[in-house]
Image (cartoon, rainbow, N blue to C red; front, side):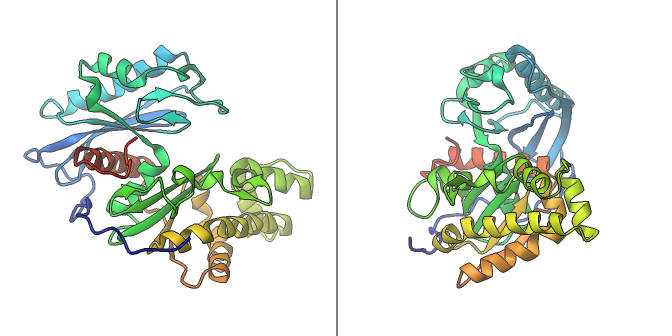
Length: 331
């Protein structure tokens, strides 16, 4: 694998993104939706890249398909009702996988969340609920939306190339080149997903994830506690907790290093629920990258609220698709 210079193309990043500042005269770029396991958030995003009329409603990922779809549709309707004008432009939906992002059809094989949406045409169902043409509803992976949002207005701002990693229930990733996610080619893992990388014959998520850390800590102590408690124990000097976290980060560094060398990003942005413990995670991660790479990227924690990053990133994705991106940004 060899690195190359960033592709020379016009960046999609805004000049500035002042958060929460209203400007009724600004044109709307579209509507963005973040679908999570417990909540759905919707907002409109204007030409100044401001998030407006944000609404958040509870969502039960185990509910029947119609109930999930109605909750998403209703959240968006509330956002439109609060705006000064009827929302225009595409509706960009950030949603976790497995998902067929090009066709807008649920997959969700091997996961518990959204089981009722398997095989459901979300594009058609949501478009019908909103009275819109299906082509105006677009989908993007939630980890890619996070990475694009941080690239546009967060910890990746000012960098041409950014790799974003989310650490939580699983491991998500985005390889961002000037506002477009690279998902194919020799510079990135399959589909741009670092979780497909195998470490000592095991999927990365079996070593670096909330579940993996709990299992590691339980094997060493006999105690089953959540990651937030493992972090608390590590800060208190619990050797087993420290070893669990450091081991996971060294494994992550080893898995990332070849792809960071190939893709040559200026920054690695880390988000997700585990990023709240960056004081514990970053030292072994940075040390591991320094040992494995000649020129490791700068490592930063994501600075935007997760949902804000996803809303902005989904809009970046939709804008890239509208401009004819050839990178498969919105599949």
